[in-house]
Every structure is written in structure tokens, then in C-alpha cells.
Amino acid sequence: MLLLVVDTAGPTGGVLLARTDWSVDGAAATGQEIEILGVMELHPRAFSAELIPAVAELLRASERRLADVGAFVAISGPGSFTGLRVGLSAVKAMAEATGKPILTLSRLAILASVAARLTPSEMGDAAMHVVLDAGRGEFYHGVYRDAGNTRVAESFETFDALVQKIDRQPGWVIVSEVSVKTAFQSVAGSRLREVASPSVRDALPLAVEEWRAGRFHDPVSVDANYLRRSDAVVVARTKAEPVAQAARVEDVRS
Image (cartoon, rainbow, N blue to C red; front, side, top):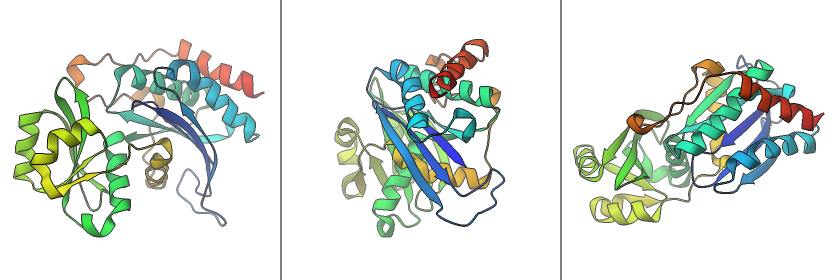
């Protein structure tokens, strides 16, 4: 069965096609568990122009069709409003056109899982404060435990409010951006850990976990995880244009 992962939540993005021996209902099959069939990067500020052609190229190169995809994975935020709308609109279009489910992942959760994999012995059961720059001197914040596997909370915070939260629940502060590292170096001290900005490849392990757990969504129920909801423009739930986009992918492939 195939997973198609779409990431347009951050400053850079990507599309990944993977094969797994796990079925939709979680039943395991024999053989190799996960195989990445192809990855394509998306350039900043070009997501809208590059996303559908990238999906079509991955399908063509792997000799698959859109209908062969068993589930679509979207990094649903937090992140750029425009980027999230582009990615989610495309994923919802493809899911509606094929009748397949969607899995959604938090960008904060992916960053937590990356940090936990890099330094598992250090992280232990301590709280992990994952911080991303939200602009305007504000931040996206996620609290995770169990080496990044358990989400406690996600929120949108000012600097002062976030410092208070970290003080009340001491733990590791995980960052991937220079601006956030600079802002929290004095707050976190030796408990600050910097990791590389997550790529679409880093989303795959969490996507497989969500698949195995059966946490699927139908296209209508999927929305962006903006966190800063008051500024968000909610993703349109009309079907005509998204289905047309998905049809163009199928046309290119066939």
C-alpha cells in the first residue's frame, strides 16, 4: 500500500511517496515494512506551482497511479497560512477524487520526534518544549513527553507567556530556527537542543504510526492547525476546484 506525504507547512516543502506492507486496517503483511519510492523538494514561495507537477512526477517515476495511493498525509501546521492552504487543498482534492483517507501531522510533533531520535538517552521522560517562530515576536509551542510520542498540548504564545510555561514545567527546549535559538538561549541554557529543520522524510515515521493506529480523516473534516486562529483564513471546503486539481494529476500520470 502507498502513502503520499505532502509538506508545505514550513519555509521549504516536499512530497514523498512510500510503500508500506501495512494495510489500512493495520494488518501487517510480510516483507519489507517501508520503502521510499521517491522524494521531491518544493522551493520556497513556489508551492502552488510545483506541488501538483511533483506529485505527478513521483507517480510517473514509480509507475503508479493516483488511485494506487492508499492514504494521503498532510503536515497540517502550524506554519504559513498560504503554504498550509496550498498543501491541504491539494491533499483534500486528491483524497476526494480517489475516495481515500487523510492522515494529518503536526509540524511540532515532527520536530519533537526528530529530537527524540537524535538524543533518545538524554530526552527520557522529561518534558519537551518544541518552539517554532510564528513571527511578530510570537511562537508556536508544543509540549511532548515519552521521547516525543505523547502530546501534552500545543499553543500560540508570546515570549513572556512561553517563558513562564517553560519555568512551570522544566524540560528540554527544542528549536530548529536561529531566531528561536537566540531568543531562548538564556532561558533554556544547557537544556536547549537545536536540530535541523524537519524535512518531508522526517514526517514518514510519524505517518506510519498514525496509519497503524488508524487515525484517518475524511477530506471534509480536515482543517489546518493554525494555532493562531484569529488571523487564519479557513481552508475552503468546496469540492469543484480541488477535484479538478486531482483530475489534472491523474491526467498527467495516465
